[in-house]
Length: 155
Image 1: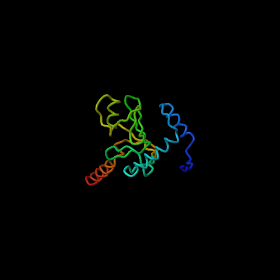
Image 2: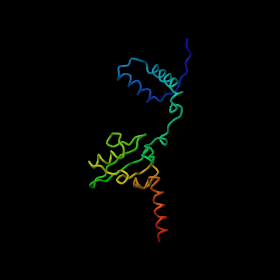
Image 3: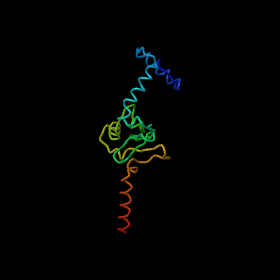
Image 4: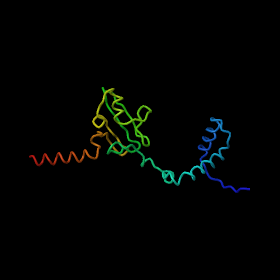
């Protein structure tokens, strides 16, 4: 006879699993499925490093060239007097329920080819105000500083 231990699982999560199995006509006991899930994790954790450390939402985000947009970042564009919004969810930008790139978002909104760096505004979770995407680019600060330096030298 095998020995057993009890592992606390949130009731809502256990009921969600049981409902999922019932909805999908899976006759297995939810407890057996949990054991299968643990076996799966053990079989895969050694070659999937993401299973070995918890990924917080702070580690998630969308990499847009040199600009990293953290999970929860809001993206906005104004076009013909209307504001259009998207949000970074996990590692994707979601616009109207679809994963999309910044350039595709701008082009979809306008129906033309536009520069997303110029047209999009960004508000990260830590920001108080909206900022232009171009102004958020790390290299834009270097370019601005260089231009100011050249202007000082010119005068």
